[in-house]
Image 1 (cartoon, rainbow, N blue to C red):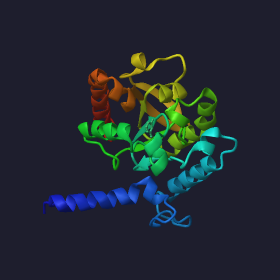
Image 2: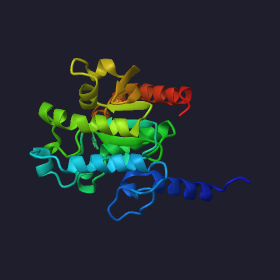
Image 3: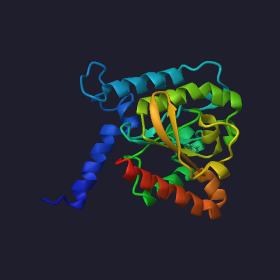
Image 4: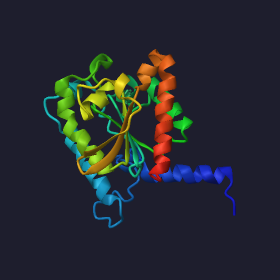
Length: 234
Ligand code: URA
């Protein structure tokens, strides 16, 4: 029997609740496979994510942490095969503790929607988990401090596709010698932790808001992700 649109929406919300990192790790959220004794598959991944979150929370001598309101860990589906990495939280993300919920996030949602993706189908995090004051770029030292956490995060999620948004994510994970305008729109195969990844860089949505004429290039990159997802049967 064909499902009604309403039923499909109910299913989607239910699925999102079952997989969304912020609900699964919320202190007052529903405890499903979160239970550390749970034999259900997925609990190990959740436990690892909880441990990583605690490790980041316990970071010492970090100026970013001192000036921030909330840690911004991640958003989306922990079982997704597509992981997206931004730079660092802005004002709205700092307030809500969720990545990409401000103006750049709204544009990111539209970009994802253009290739039939949304937050129930991807997993999103950042290079640094606390807001750099005045939205400045994180420093080399700050990036180096958070990089082991980011690599661990990627290893736990174990995506097949990694989308790096902007130069900070590109330089942190691929190297300082490349520039985003040259690196974008090209697939790189790389292993991070134990995860074997197809990596692609594209422009950061905040950059696209300042330079909307570059959106046509971002669209090419998005279509490459859509094609790769089909090839990889994601
Ligand atoms: N920009 C980022 O890079 N990350 C966010 O979470 C928000 C804005």
